[in-house]
Image (cartoon, rainbow, N blue to C red; front, side, top):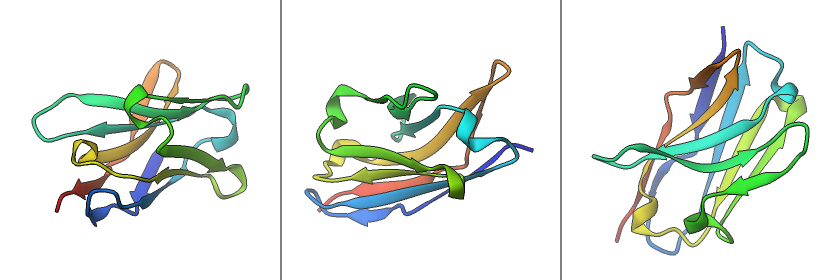
Length: 116
């Protein structure tokens, strides 16, 4: 079955950096757009970044442009989210996702806390 396992979250001070990973299984990873979402406490899940297939275009929400970078390694079936200059507003559970056959699948997520 489709599975995602995220890792790399943790606590970081404002201005710090974290690198998240998402390893997928159960489908042909290279054939699908991979999207990172996040959910802050008490808020709705929101789009963060996507690495589209086959165009290879990277899309970001406005608030993370210039700070976050999405990448992927199809040979390892793994997507990454490199996060720099973190802000307390970036706090949340980050999960990766793919949509196939009109169903969107999510991983359990990894928690990111940005505070001093």
